[in-house]
Length: 343
Image (cartoon, rainbow, N blue to C red; front, side):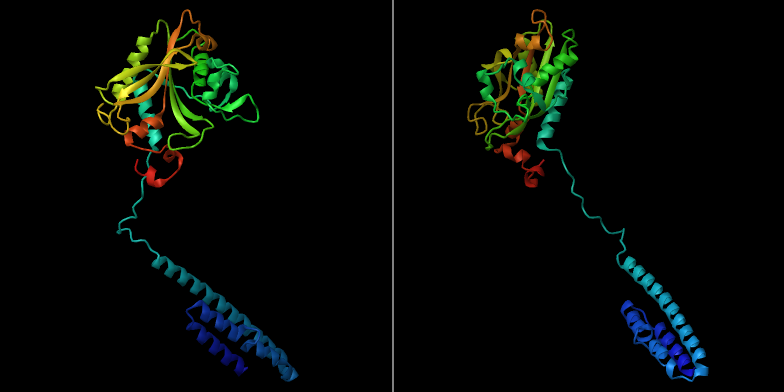
């Protein structure tokens, strides 16, 4: 019995000085392990006189329970102390300056689109969003491009498994949808711009991409003339580039407009004197435009004998490239932060 008491005093005394998890594990192995002090006491029961055996066994069992309880209490205390120490060491000093947080920015193409939309909204045009996955009939046929029309070769197309469904090659099919939806069967005038992504199966180079954005414009009303188109484009150029910007018009061809013209603005970088960006001509091409073809008006629900209109199309990426001296259109969709962070 004196051996049990001595073991008890020794074990509890050593436990008081244990302050780490490793030391606690060693203490447990020494006293409560299979080959520990208490375990050896259980092995001695067979050599004790029969009349003392039961009392000795009960006291050893009580010692084991007491030491196990003391072990659990010490383990909880050490865990709490370790947690408190970790929290104290990892405490944040709120008086220190915070880590700088890098701010993002708008994509350069998005910036140009927003500038476009602000200007055209101020000129009375509303934004009309059209679908990117389009029907062949709306993308081509309704725009005066019937099957086998040679102008279809100007746009290499991404078709789906359904030969009548494709990724739109331009924003012009939105003209048909806008006329039908907003024109209310050809009874109301409309003025809209149609921004969005377009897709063409082209070789990717520094000047061409298989995806890029366009901004289409459309105005339908009574007695709209070419002079209205020229005045509208000229006003846009003055607001977008320079209040004194000069604009010139060149005859061109588009299947969905007649007559058609290209629009150039005086180079805003060199003031018309000639530079590398304008190829030393003093002019920059900014848009294609023309009077809406009677067939397109009819397909949109309007009577060409009573209604007329004009349309134009612009490339925001091209204008962004010209304004910032960007030489490779692939930068816009390459997700290179070195390029994007400049904006």
